[in-house]
Image (cartoon, rainbow, N blue to C red; front, side, top):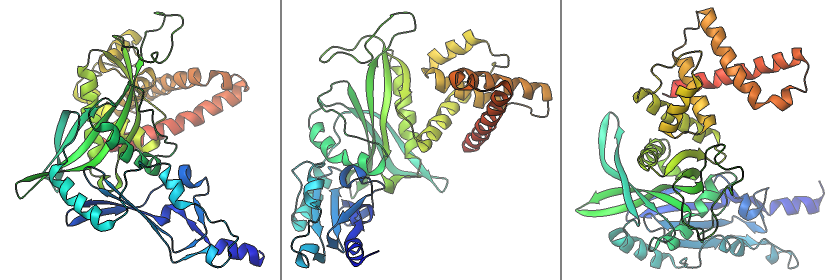
Length: 395
């Protein structure tokens, strides 16, 4: 590496490490760093041109009023005037609303006043408590459903949406002019010296698609035309689902999903629930909660191999799962009650799963020889069963 390259590398920093995010309450703060910054700073997540760069994005924990500051010990133009450091301030400004605050004392005053005056927007659709050390925490958590016509929500959403980029790989901003978006907001509600204080915990974006059964229409636009009213049949798609890092691994994701699912079940317009490109942690959460519902409701109690397709389809419509998720939950449930020492039962289960795997991958598998096809199916099946066993340990 030549001296120029070394000098250039010396002025590079990791953008994930440079950004500090804080959620501030009066006399208390939570801090974390983003997992992803490539939508802002490029695929390598590097910033050029500074020594000891610090990017501060601080938020009032309820209203998400924002303090934004960039500082550094040295800028490369002080050494090499012709150098072109990254425009850090400009890049981040593209992703946050322009109502941010640059004076820290002013921001602290806003944190104090917002803690007293901020209230969630939208309609409350659920609440819960969290158990800690086998005791119920006094803190209440509330879930509110909103859309972009809800008063004050657009401004709030413009502040929170950058968290999706920071925490969800592949996330992008949603269109606030599209009326078919619904958003669920999760807040922590604290009672401090008789004062109710709300802190933002997480959120979920959902999109209402047109739904029609197979054969009902030969051709249909997947989403509704702009400015049209919703039909009586809706496929609700979960898009972004995020619990902020300071609140993760505490059960909030399960509680939010369960509350949304119960609201979907209670809404007669919603016929099916889908998820957009779920990552593994969310798929685990989804599997665990869907399975728990199916077990607790005893909907699968009498299901056994060979499976009666009409019975399963009736159950699927009742619980509003899409075909893939229903098949997955059914297979995990059947594995749960399977006696693997009974070779005939185990063989029937393997064949049931392999038939689905073959249908799902038929075009690819048909390009292989029979021997290769059987081997590939067996390998795939083993991976599926291992994954199902892992899910069962989460129940």
